[in-house]
Amino acid sequence: MKIILQAAAAAVSLALCAPGGAAETDSAIESSARQSYVFQVYLKGDDIKVESNNGAVVLTGVVAKSFHQSLAQETVVGLPGVRSVANRLRVKESPPAANSDAWLLDRVTAALMFHRSMADGNARVEIKDGTAILRGQAASQRQKDLAAGYVKDVEGVKEVRNQLTVPAVPKKPSPVTYARIDDASITAQIRMTLRYHRSASAPAISVSTDKGAVTLGGKVGTAAEKALAGRLVEDIRGVKSVKNLLTVD
Image (cartoon, rainbow, N blue to C red; front, side, top):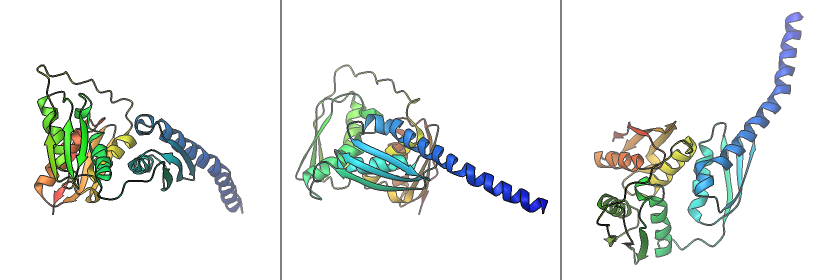
């Protein structure tokens, strides 16, 4: 009888403690999302509400661009304690028609925006009949070449005209602060970058981040895809190191 009573008491204790624990986890999830690097920097102009119930998160509100929907979801999915995410975000304006120049510009913009090598300079992208035209100034010849390579590999781009200019004296790269870039934001940036590159096989690549150290897993079709994925990830803001465990199938 004593054993039964002890077991019953323990069960009651757990039942009483569980709601409070779940509430604390939900509060931490909501707070972490709002304070994440992605929400603070890339989504700061959007009206996004994050509500968690026992780790089941619902995103509601209005965002400026369609890829902001995916970026918000990718960030929240990577937070500790999250079990599922229901994305009910609405786009402020109707998304551009698939395969149109405006649609392709969104994809190119999303593919470039997370690279630290693109932080300096004032490169601009225009799309005309599927051709990407790069204008403005790159910080260095390396940045100019990287920009063209990144854009050329975006799904849907037919051609790249690289009209970026390079200053006679290259600019020194801006210092990057890693401390405020959380792991969930780093992973989200990587997932978003990979999904727009035709050579990166994003669906087949797993990404895990621990204090800025990124591990890539899964299978890709060629050694070139493996190498490209590694180069893309190394250039993402907040990434300190990359362990490329991709295998070629």
